[in-house]
Image 1 (cartoon, rainbow, N blue to C red):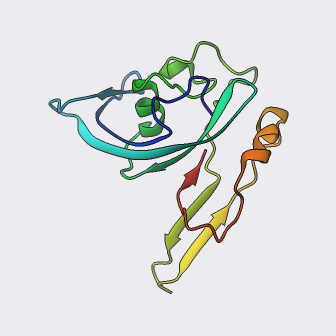
Image 2 (image 1 turned 30 degrees about the vertical axis):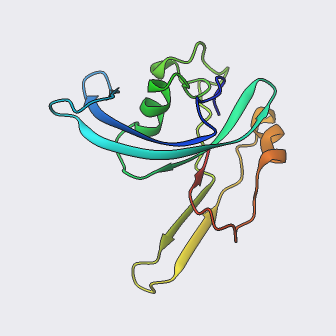
Length: 145
């Protein structure tokens, strides 16, 4: 969930991420930087409601704080994420980042596994259910945030 609309309806973001372990903060660089790891994700805007945008994000690499750092780098920090430049915290100190759906191939059975989680029991999240595609059979098997 972000307040500022991303520059494109959907896109692939590529950054080079470096984590400061002492501060527990990851910095996203637009160009290769010594010690930083290439990081990729795709996103698409699912909808707009009450001055916020619901994004579907699919990380293609698994770096620490990747989604938070990369969205902040394009000027779209996650709602409530003051560590990554959102303007104010949520009242409960949470951030609006939620793993809604995950897909993977079972390592033994070699069959697809799809897990769908409910949105957190919170009025702010629940209002966005109207934008949820919600179909487990959907071919878009990424993560919904």
